[in-house]
Amino acid sequence: MKKIKISPSILSADFSQLGKEIENLEKGGADMIHVDVMDGHFVPNLTIGPPVIKALRKYTSLPFDVHLMIDPVHKYIKDYAESGADIITIHPEATKSLQGSIDEIKKYRKKVGLSLNPDTKIEIIEQYLEQVDLVLIMSVFPGFGGQKFIKDVLNKIEKINEIRNKKNFEFDIEVDGGINFSNFRDVLKAGANVLVSGTTIFRENNGDIKKNINFLKSI
Ligand code: DX5
Ligand code: ZN
Image 1 (cartoon, protein in one colour):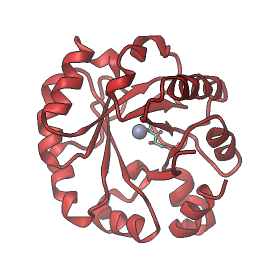
Image 2 (image 1 turned 90 degrees about the vertical axis):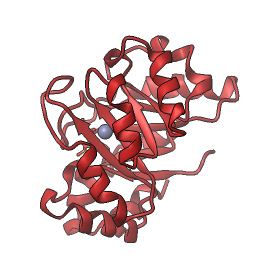
Image 3 (image 1 turned 120 degrees about the vertical axis):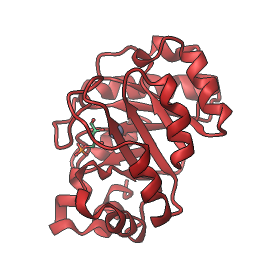
Image 4 (image 1 turned 135 degrees about the horizontal axis):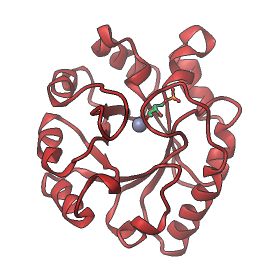
């Protein structure tokens, strides 16, 4: 069983205090910081870009797990790599050449993540799996925090985990969207080992980040 990692999403953080919030996440035991980048085109919301990520870099040495919900994505990979991203996760639908974009991320020596929306089939990324460090299974349609977990994705997590085990691949399986205290164990049992959470980590137990992160690790 791969180590369980928690990657809190700063989408649910106080955007006027992102530096402080990131410090609190590190103190609270986060393994990575999930940065949801949205362009108002690939998804119906607009968040932050490279200048903000660059400004936040000095607040933690934890990996920046950058989820690019932007289209087109290829021409911006350089900017995110140079702003301080450690893992760059892209959506296959947002690039003309998935192989080209994977190569571009690797050119900057960053880890490669591929993200599947709830209605996107595993088949479209299967041939690339040996090259990637992370597969991000969306359990909501991307764009907003606080949405309801889509239970059907549990089968997809099991399927990608089967492929990982059968082929001895090393990539992490990360799940993002609607993770809470009543569904996280199902997600881990299905084979995921990285949980993204914004609402649950920032809002539960009166915002006790450390308590919430520890609970999500207690399978
Ligand atoms: C959707 C975002 C959210 C966020 C987590 O585009 O990617 O899934 O990270 O949101 P919560 O944990 O609030 O459902
Ligand atoms: Zn995300």
